Image (cartoon, rainbow, N blue to C red):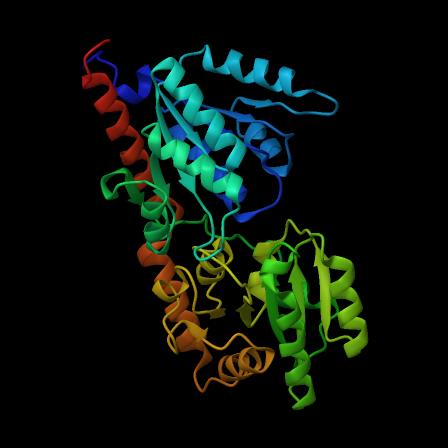
Length: 377
């Protein structure tokens, strides 16, 4: 047996994020980083503006996490904490988020490491001047990008990244493991017998457009369709969305943040996304893993995932009535099992956690091997 260490064993990988609270990108890292640790990459994680639920999950999985920006820490303390991490001399720095991308690009340059941005930004969503400036600086400093959808590539090229520095790796997700039978979950949520369940998952913010979700469910109620809408998530728009639900006389329940989303997917009949911007939503992949068809807008990377009329329905007109029609076509599909099976087949063929981790591991290992081959300066 050879005693020669591989590049991944010789060099640690530092992951930097603003926070690791609620969100699809944060959930993505919570599954990815421990899996990379199991493959010998010795990852460490730093958050610059506090911790969050997924930081706690990483710690519980045995990943070293340094939480900066906690409480009344000032900017100097955050910088000092990051400098201490960089003094460990990671050979590869992976980041997501504006502050993390800038810190990672500059820090990697100073210590002679490589920097990779993990780009989760929704395709088509305008970037503010500060965000644009940071991304351009990263491109100028020689950073690379792992994007989660091919739909993101044109914008990244506009911001200065050449094609050879952009790698697209589809998101993947761990298969949901329901803890209760669907009937038990429905009973717990108070779903009346014989009612269809429309599930929404996401942050309650304006870009997710849950107002359309609520109006679409109300539209179907007006047609006499027995169904209930449930939304798992929290955010700044919660109070206004609740007022909208109250004005419509109910029909939709805001569940808040949930740890039992696997049970919700199993208990639902269709996942409905109404977002204004998306890249490759984790919620769609989780729904597919749970044999749940999807109604979603034809934006970003979604049309590459949702096959219209096969594993779900694409909505091209962004209106509540269009979403109501799409939901009706799924709810009244002549062969619901066929659509569910197609959803599951999409997950198995492209979006398993194992496939995603394998591709990230390959990309990181190739980068570390290139560093090892580079001449010493």
